[in-house]
Length: 387
Image 1 (cartoon, rainbow, N blue to C red):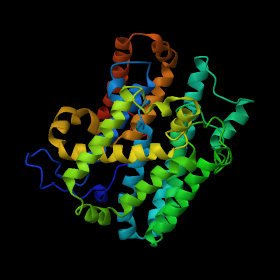
Image 2 (image 1 turned 90 degrees about the horizontal axis):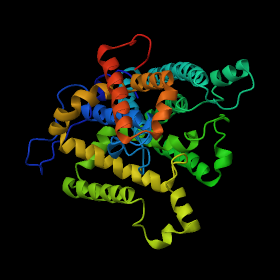
Image 3 (image 1 turned 45 degrees about the vertical axis):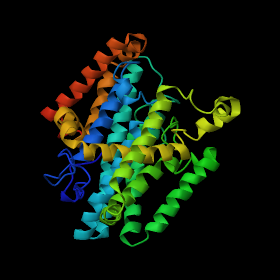
């Protein structure tokens, strides 16, 4: 989820010499449309996973039950884009200007977080739902404003606010040649959550109702991606030496294995991993809230596969789905905010859909998705809601 981006958003486009057909991506402007399309797919997955229950669209989105979800991809892509964009800003205007812009962006995200949390909280209360620990309205609002309490769907912009603020400090480390320090600190913070989650979950401070997006764990996606984006030219130069064919085959094979295990419900795992404590320990390694080590590995291969797949088969993908995914990806923060407000207006109705037929849920999910797409295309409330 990022703002309108300058020319620094463009990635070097490499047309693999080993591909004989003209389907690979070739840059035609200042933006890397592959990243926009991937973020657009994340918006699609986010919307259909948040509306109603089981549906036919879940076969594509993964229903938030795959080895990774749209949330990890959003955080990773946001960090990657930040690294690219702010590398250009630092080069043109200096590190202080880059840090200032990052903090201003964090301030924008903070205001959106507070507004969405309060509005969506009121909508939930109107429909008769709980909003977590509640002593009084002044206390609840004060905790929301100070980022000490969140609610369902308000936790995502909250983690973005913290990540962007921390990203300003990370930008200074990157710009001053301290990349190793940044990665070491990020790794240590992630490891602290793996070893002592009850303690690390209170960093940078305790946040009531924040049960999923723990900053010490989730910052690993953002920081690693920001580092890759900042050093994109060096990374691209290194990747030229990697054989593209074997790379794509390995990434595709591992992704296919994860897809197979997902579709079979893990029943094809070795029998020893399907029993009692060992199965619980194995599942813990894929824990979403804690960004478990196997989940990080799954994310790494999934991100590589997705980017390579979109690069190699860009033309048919763009022609079939670009009209839908590109606008959503280019306004992903706006799309997230509006889908929360739409959900809030009819939350009770969507909640009742959980027990409805797959066709009913599919229709409702696609209807909300197209409503958000229509809002993007008509620039509805663009002057109010950040993009």
